Image (cartoon, rainbow, N blue to C red):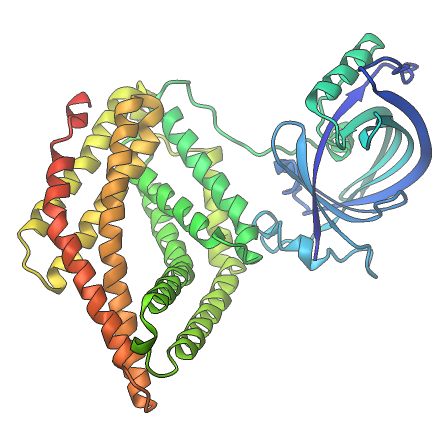
Length: 505
C-alpha cells in the first residue's frame, strides 16, 4: 500500500554567487548542523499535454537519497503537498497502480511519458533542538533535461528548500528572515519541475476564467468551480474505496446540477442542460453504491435493536450476503464508469466550462438581484410541491409527493449555499431551514426504500424455507415511522412557510 506523507516546504532562489547563510541563533534553542551530501536522479512523468503539471501535480521516479522510489505530489494548501510514495519496482517507465489510480481523473486514459529528468546534488543541513529534527534545509544544484517532442532543452540552477519536519511555521518564518538578509527570495515556481518547464518555454496552467468581482458571473463561477474541484478531489478516493467518498462525490454532482438551475439566467442553458444530464447520470451511478451503504446500515441497526426472541432464522447471514452481493455489483459498475469514455468526456466538459464559462449578458450584472431571483424561484417550487403533498391521500402517491418536496427543499438548500456570497445571512439561514426540512423528509424516503428492500428479503427468505417473521416485523416498524413523519409534516411545513426569511429576500 502506498505511503502518504504531508510535506510542508518553501523554496528559495538567489543571485549567482550567494551562498548558504550561517543560521547560528536563528531561533531560541535551535541549532543548524551540516549533514550529508547526496546525488539524486529523478525522471518526471506526465501526459504529452502536461495535464498533471497544469494542476500543480508532480509524478516522478527518483533514485538516490533516503526516500528513493516513486513519488506523487498533490497540492494540499499553502506551502503544503501530500506526497504519495511507492517502491521503485522493476519498471522504470510503468507508473505503479497505487499512484496511477490517484491521477486518473487528470490523465483520462492518456499515457504518462517522461517529460523532465532532474539530476541534483543536494547538501543537507538539519535544524534541531534538544528533541527531534525540526526542519531540513537543502541546498540543491540542479541540472534539468526537458523533453518536448523531439527537442531536448537543458538548463541548470541553484535553489534552497526549507522543509518542516517537526518544526512549526514560526521556525520557517525565522529561517526565511535569515535567508532574506543574505539575498535569498521565495521562488516563483512551486516545484523543480515547474521551473524546468518554464525555462524550456512550457508553462502549463489550468485555465480559469476571471469575471468581474461582485458580478453574477463571478458568484456563479466560484460556486461551480468549488464543486468541480470537489468532484476531482473525491475521484481517487472513490476508486480507493475510502469511507464516505461516494457520498461526497455524489453531493458535488448534485450541487453542480443545482447550480446550473440556480444560475440558469447567468450560464447558457444550451450548455448546462447537456452537462446537467451527464451529471444526473453520474449521480445515479454513484447512488447505487451510496444507497446500498445507507440501506444496509439502517437494516443492521434495526435488526440489532430487536429483542433476541424476535429474530427468527438466519437473518444476519441473509442480510450480510445480500449486502455483499449488491455492494460488489455497485462497486464494479462504478469503477467501470470512472474509467469509461463518457465520464472522461464529462470531465473534459467541466474543465472547458471553468475555463470558458458560457455566460449570458446577465452574468455581467451585479450579483445581488440575480441571486435573489434565483433563490425565490427555487423557494416557490418548494411551496408548489408542498401544497400537492398536503392534499394527497396516504399511499404511494403521497410517498412520491413528499419525495418531491424533499428534492425541492434540497434545491433551496443548495441555492442558498450558492447565493450566500451575494445575499449573505438571509440566504444561509434559509438554506439551514431547508436542510432541516430535507432531513425530516429524508427519514420518510429512507423508510420507503427500506420497505422495498424488506419485502424482497422476506420473499427470498420464504422461498428458501426460512421464517420471514423478522422481515415482516421490521416492515411494520417502517410503516409506523413513515406515518409519524407524515403526521408531523404539516406542522413542520407551517413553521417553514411562516419564516420571515423570505421577506428579507
